[in-house]
Length: 179
Image (cartoon, rainbow, N blue to C red):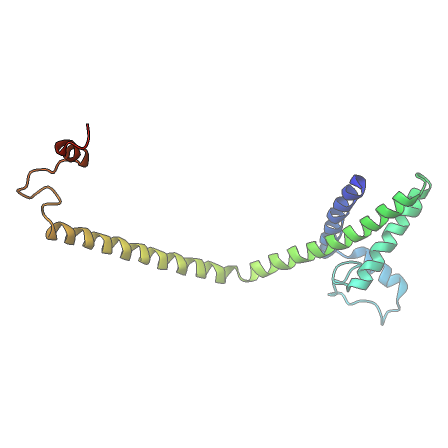
């Protein structure tokens, strides 16, 4: 089970790498497209479709499975295939497929962030200015309240004619309730 988990995680990373690589360049797919199709059916120069990049789920699944079957045939001569190898094959295919979708999400999210970075910048600046005004209003209100309290209760600030009050402990001692 541990080996399958390691294979699954590695295949997710492999899927991310495959998707990212194909999003940058699809030369192998283009080459095979030129070999297999006539001039009229070949993909256009601006088409970025690859084996995995911009493909539907079913075609993605077929290409990834074909890749891993080819790898299994090559490794068949190096290692004997048994039940564990078949289990690892399934983990690798699913992990790679999952990795391609994770990579697609990350790439699309970064494109959206790049497109909307100016809007986000303006929103952040606006929010910062509003917060600054709010803090200024709070601090000016607090200063007004402090100024009003000192005028209403001059004895509280120590400017009155009364002598300073005793602490609660001293009053209790005076009454004889505390030793």
